[in-house]
Image 1 (cartoon, rainbow, N blue to C red):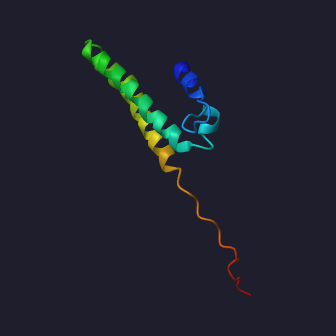
Image 2: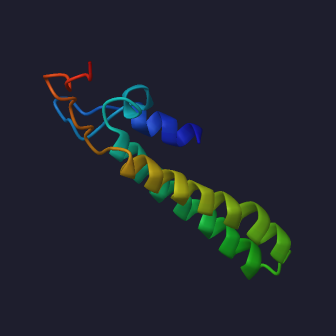
Length: 97
C-alpha cells in the first residue's frame, strides 16, 4: 500500500489527472472509488495465486477473496456517493396558524 500512496502523491506539473490521498476524499471521491476497484484486482490475483499453488481454499476465499470483495463494494459505494445534493428551496414552506 505504501507504493500506491507514493504513486498517488506524485503530481505531474499542470496535470489535473493526478491527485494525492489528502484531496481524494474531498475533491475527487470518484477517483478514490476507481483506485479501490483497481486495487481489488491485486487481491483477486492473490486469491488466484493461492489457489494455483494448491493453497487452502479457506485462506484464498476467506482472506483474499473477502478483502477484494469488500474493496469492490466500498469503491462502488464511494463512486455512487458522488451525486450532487439538491439545494433547499429558497422560500420556506408556509406554516399552519
